[in-house]
Amino acid sequence: MHLKILSYNWHEPYLCLLSKIGHTFLIVEPEISEGNYRHWDTNMRPIPNNVILLSEEEAISQLDEGDVDLVIAHNIKDLVKIYEYSLPKIIVFHNKLNTEIELGGNIVDRVDYLNKLKPLLINVKKIFISESKRNDWNMDGDVILPGINVDDYGGYTGIKPSVLRVGNMIKERDIMMGFTKSEAILSNISSITLGQNPNILGSRISSGFDDLLCHYRSLRVYLHTTSNDYEDGYNLSLLEAMAVGMPIISIANKTSPINDGINGYISNDVEYLKRCVATLLEDRDLAISLGQSARETVREKFSQTKFLKLWLKSIETVIIDFLENSSKELPKENISLKTEQEDTSMPQYYKHVRDDVVSLVPKDATDILEIGCAAGMTGRELKKNSDVYFAGVEIDHKAALEAKKVLDCVIEGNVETL
Image 1 (cartoon, rainbow, N blue to C red):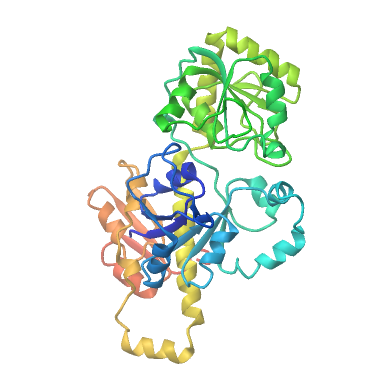
Image 2: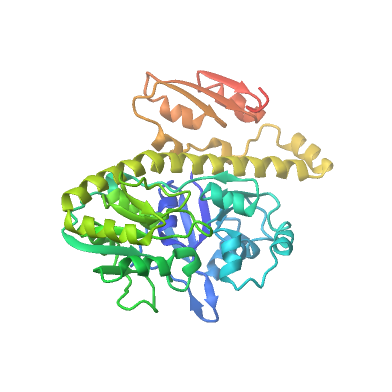
């Protein structure tokens, strides 16, 4: 099965991670003010091959024509735009609500805001990028940590004795990004800041992803200062720096992946961190050693394979839930009429090979169980390897009957009640 997934251009690095799922992504370049659009920034990431950029008008046309299979929203404004359309929907929560309220000047009442959101979130699957974000919103939903393929990075030399800081609007979001503490740590120390930071002298936007990688690889140390109360102890920039092999200097944060003296240095003591920076700027071998441990931390705790598998599972779940809810909402007379006229039919959804799943199955796998095997087309594709034994579970009766023709074993029913 190959999906057309509509989403919005708010976070190029995260969208690039999502694009590795393998479907077609229709990315809307939204209007952020009258006549001002948030176009894809190729300085942050190149456009993936399976991403198609759309205007909001083009997106509405695709939605009206029924050419979209799924929407992934990244904020409430996205959800408002597609509220009237009946299709599977996911919203990703990238930030804490308390942080957004604080940054907005505390003019929004949290309880009132959450009550107003309830109608928008009906039948919308919620995904949080961390457990702390889910706890802050106090909602049910899946937690999917970001995933980095360490093998795509590497190449650290640390040849330049300087500190790297990466982020957008760091000073303006001080309570979240820890600008004040980072400035204290960097006092009288050579450093470079990359990102959109109009109020930080010398900061510039990277000239492309290769430029960003060059800085990760050549500068000695990476500084990370996100606030424990308002943000996680990591973000994609930190994980990328670690994946390259940079040692990390970090302000203490409950969710930080940094262990003091193991893959970097972490503390609430600014003076201690200044001394650690000085040590690393003088000792490149120590920096290389800590950086290698940082790479392994990302490999173990922020696996790209796990990220993709969890996303694929969430997408599968939201589509199945949508189909089941849609059938429940049909008037009884329509259901009986459809049964009489289309008894031998089966939705096309069940008949596709899931290329996204096939790509994730190890080549040496011989015993495979697929939950939600549909008509067995994915299993049939994998059974081209004669050594594979393929079993499936499928809730749809007609799809299960078809799957039994091509798979080794098929159980019909709901996996949660079998």
